[in-house]
Image (tube, rainbow, N blue to C red; front, side, top):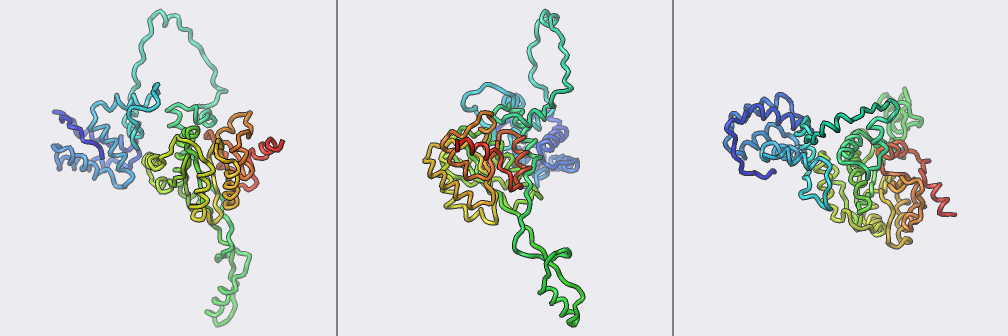
Amino acid sequence: MPEYIPLELPENPKLAGNIVHFARALRKAGLPVGTGRTIDAIHAVEAAGFTDKRDFYWTLHACFVNRPEHRRVFAQVFRLYWRDPRYLEHMMSMMLPAVRGVQEDRGAQAAEKRAAEALLDGAEAPDMPERPESDAEDEIEIVVDASQTMSAEERLRSLDFEQMSTAEVAQAKRMLARLTLPVEPIRSRRMQASLRGRRIDAARTLRQSMRQGGELHSIALRTQRPRWPNLVVLCDISGSMSQYSRIVLHFLHTVSNAKGAGWAKVHAFTFGTRLTNITRHLATRDVDAALAAAGAEAQDWEGGTRIGECLATFNRDWSRRVMGQGAVVLIITDGLDRDDPDELARQMERLSLSSRRLIWLNPLLRWEGFAPKAQGIAAMLPHVHSFRAGHSIESLETLAEVISRPDDVGEKTRLMRMIGS
């Protein structure tokens, strides 16, 4: 619910035009608002009147919102458009790159930046100061042949998440929203009826013959029933991993809500100094609200790292609940842990034995001269099935291609030779 600011109503509000523009902003923010709803909203406001601000809010809410996940987006767009007279100046200053301190004055609420992008669509950026005429006259026009250069999207695919600007992070999230993480089904021991099966279903064949007086007209066949594994993600949210974790969790939200991806269920955990289960938060359809709730649940965000202790908690409390049916495990961390490396190795071994495949995504692998010199990395590496980079969109696209390949080891073999030497 937005905070109701005591503002004076304008004398000539041009109400119908403002409601139309407000409906367009809602549509750009992701709400399914069409012409019919806009006309209904104008008629509803005309019938309800424009004297009480609370009645006005709920009148528009009744016309434009029909799903729970749309309430927060509607509330933010309404607050910015109808309640804050300086919303444009405020949101411009929040969205443009600026030099800030350790913390912003006021963090953006869930769905607020998305609402601002919808309202600022087409708005002009602040004007730059004009240069003197003398500088303009001395300006030399430079023509660059860009025919062989990469497109902006191609460059963004290989750019490190930590080096992206605010606009590039927003574009990267939109690209990740189109990315899927498909998985091949697993053949189970259970059987199902099939016209092209290779095994005879004796029981069903006899039942069919009994219905026909004991005569055998056809042989029933069966085949193995396919099943899909669970996906379990353990994401490091310590200080060194915070920027990577935010974007990876955005991608994980897309995977959790994707239809037809094949996963039986997606379980997500964050860890820093403690383990936090955020699976239920990622089930929220609105990505801003989901990540805001997950961030509020994980109290150790950008704190220290205790990988061994957090893995021990997962193996003790959660492994039997979520690791059944041959789960695939993604662990996303840089491996920089100061706890006992022997205990970390024991917990990684137990995690590896419980999973069908254990894949480690490490953003430090982006460096060409990376070597497993840290004790935590050396303790974890022997127990993973695949070791890959996880610092860019391209690395996540590669993960989507190889996640179902049991022979993929990534960079593990090369780095194990370094440990052995």
